[in-house]
Amino acid sequence: MEIKLLHKDMNEKEIIERIKKIKAELGKKLVILAHHYQRKEIVYLGDYGGDSFELSRKATENNDARFIVFCGVNFMAESAEILSQPHQTVQLPDLDAGCWMANMADISIIDEAWEQAVSVIGKDRITPVVYMNADAVIKDFCGNNGGIVCTSSNTPNAFKWSFSRREKIFFFPDKHLGRNTANKMGIPPEEVIIWNPETPFGGNTKEAIKNAKIILWEGYCLVHTRFQIEDILKMRTKFPDAKIIVHPECPQEIVGQADAAGSTSFIVNYVDQAPAGSTIIIGTEINLIERLAHEYPDKQIFPLKHSLCPNMFKINLANLLWTLENVGKVNIIQIPDQIKKGAKKALDRMLTL
Ligand code: 13P
Ligand code: SF4
View 1 (cartoon, rainbow, N blue to C red):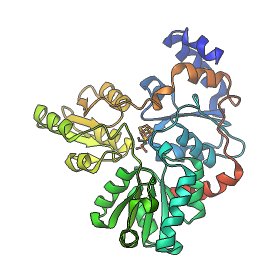
View 2 (view 1 turned 45 degrees about the horizontal axis):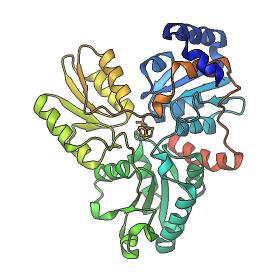
View 3 (view 1 turned 180 degrees about the vertical axis):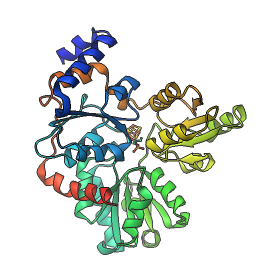
View 4 (view 1 turned 180 degrees about the horizontal axis):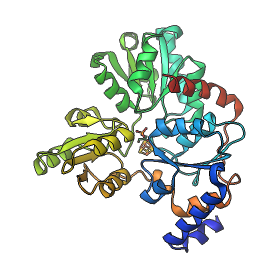
């Protein structure tokens, strides 16, 4: 902790120089993975940037690396640890970098909900599907119950995979991503129900549970539920020729009014492919939008609304440098073997989709 404070007194340029020096010294022994929502300076120091899916793949591809430093949030670093090799350590520069949405799904409550649901439907008729944004122990639960992990870039494929095995899905924890995926796949709204963990049977009648094709856990991201229809209307009036693109963690009303929706890498690629002179309004985390505006000065890029993920923002130059100076020693992500096994099964199913 003291060292971290010391780094706060150094100026940005000095910290960056020291990070670059350590990177050069460690060479291939070190790989820094940075999620698209990280501060711009962190993304530029990363060996790879990407969405959750791409970064989990990178964690499996860099066998030369002894040290993986994950600049993102806890569930991402946990997934990298589960997918990494025994000779590798995964570190997260701030262990308090969690995820609000992941905190909405607790394994003991999920266990109870699952028992209630299968008591109505029957165990062999439903597949648990877990969004990457959840604790390792929930991924383990899914792996052990024939389920799969998905990210925002492959949810429709994970749903198709599940429907090819069993007729129903229980999806945790993002109700909006689940709803938007169901809409995209043409599943009628009456076949999609919400499971509110605070009430018995999720607040549903047994009849409704029997008739449902998809059950959605009552979870959401506070960064993406800040966007409202008024924000879209305001931007459409101000920039009538603009394209509006949003992340699928936004509510269905927002996705329905947008021109496109997709993962953070989808958004990056969309901006990259847009012709010079385009105006693009983006509904997602602000650090990504500001970085894109900086990188594409020939395009006009604006946020639908300013919305910051304070957890992603916890990773900074000071704690990245502190982690690198203590590489392999501090803030190591450790997952008990009994949890790793099922979680890896569920992650591997996603990676082979
Ligand atoms: P992506 O998988 O699209 O990068 O999203 C991760 C996330 O946490 C969005 O809030
Ligand atoms: Fe979690 Fe939302 Fe932050 Fe993504 S943006 S890490 S879902 S709190």
